[in-house]
Length: 275
Image (cartoon, rainbow, N blue to C red; front, side, top):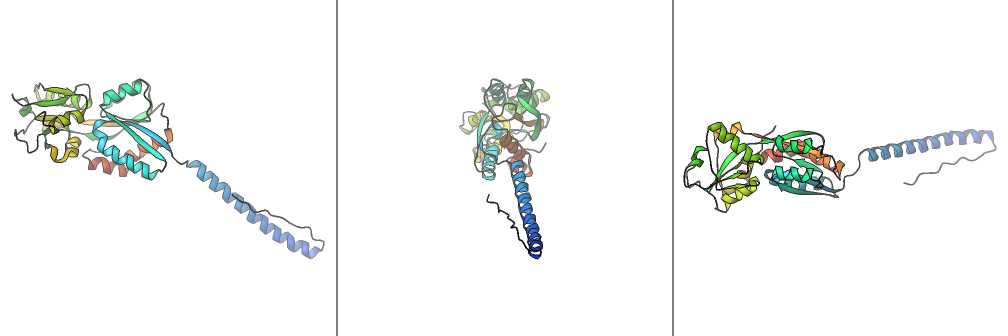
């Protein structure tokens, strides 16, 4: 920034010295004001560094649609940043993080899988619950098998898919079955909720127990069926900054976007519940 140079000249005559002195004081005051303003501007700029670089987010598979939208929003709000995602089963992601995989943010589909990361000392601070999710039955379009309850899935001849019991959607489904005293033998256990839903979308299964958000994201590829036992197996979703995050500032900003009113609108619009 160009700064003005303030000079005074020695004037022999008294009257002219007085006049020049007053002018010099005014000029010096202007220079001082300009300097102070420049200093304040520099301070304000340094207190709000511009975000840049890549932000790597490990997130539960059920967050794929809503987090992808939020990633695009974040990049528009902060030109020069790039958000990359790894969507998978929460237990797989937690194992990757504790195994040393580089990431900035972890968003899990359950406190239990988040605990794997926090217990290993891989989280920075305390995870915060940002949404909740509830189960729903996904059937073939139009529900040709007339599934109306969780008990209907135990009927013979019906090909049902569940998430593996080690992942949050599978643990929640098992909790709902246990609460109802029902036993269900699926044709397969899948490693994440998207894989379970895909089996129905491809007509390789008649039904799957997934999240409401996944049924909504699938549109007319499946038909959703509510069941009351799902209220006994609602999952909280926690999010945290990771201890060895390569891009801490941008990671914190992304988490704030997720928790913000704008972020919550996107998430609830996808079918998630507020915490």
